[in-house]
Image (tube, rainbow, N blue to C red; front, side):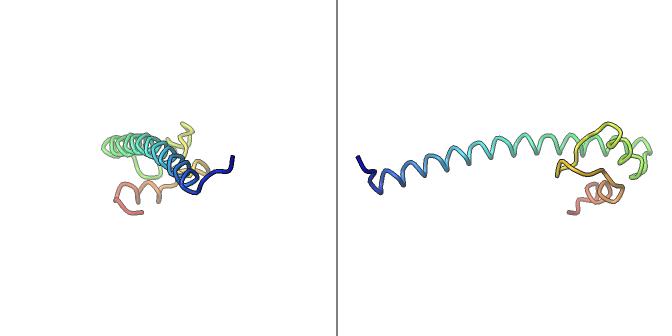
Length: 85
């Protein structure tokens, strides 16, 4: 039995809604993890750590960057702490 156009549209909309819901769940978790890292950066900074030392600590603890590759750099820490992208 061939699908009607309305059935195809309905199935596609259901799929898109499921994907959007999954994306939102992931984003909330990502934001929580990012907030934890920022709070950790602030705590280390309040203890007198330099941006370079914070990056060194994160790299030694193997904390992944947002892109999940590469290493932490002092300039990245500074931009995050200053609220710049």
